[in-house]
Image (cartoon, rainbow, N blue to C red; front, side, top):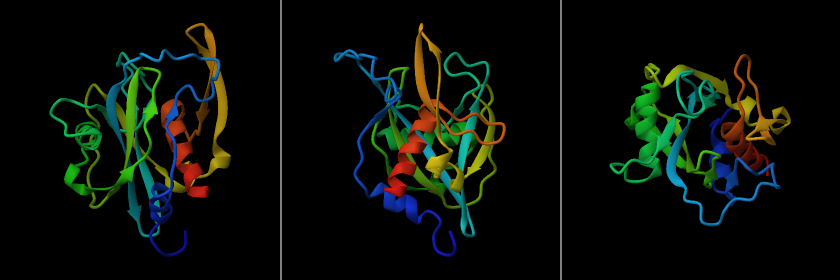
Length: 200
């Protein structure tokens, strides 16, 4: 983007209507029980701007974790009783996982809920980092903190649909790899939804 705010397209996208998404979007044969109970969670889609460029912070989860070991993810987690809402949870978790002080984040808005295969109703919180910080990976939870150019994740042409066996069935999912980082699953699905809204 030449001149102006590189996050202007993101602000515009947040103002557009959109529906909820799911890890099961590409798998219409999966029948989910109506009485399932989802746990509330919040994740932070944190953008940093430098001049006319913007980048997104992501994490590589610890390979020692029980759930999603080694996967690429947004900082975030479940809503604790002490959290006012999913936004508060996302900001708290980002501070814990990557060392981003919550008072250095301007919340721009939220995206529709995303249901994960692990039973979470995940609220993606979109924010702008307002001041420099030193990323610190939370020991035992995060192996690495890195950034991806906004232009990469907002290009729908870079997304692919792949599949793998999961619980005895083929599961299809979105991917948007970047260098050595294999971005897939819920992270890629949420980012693709945002990219779709930007280009709508």
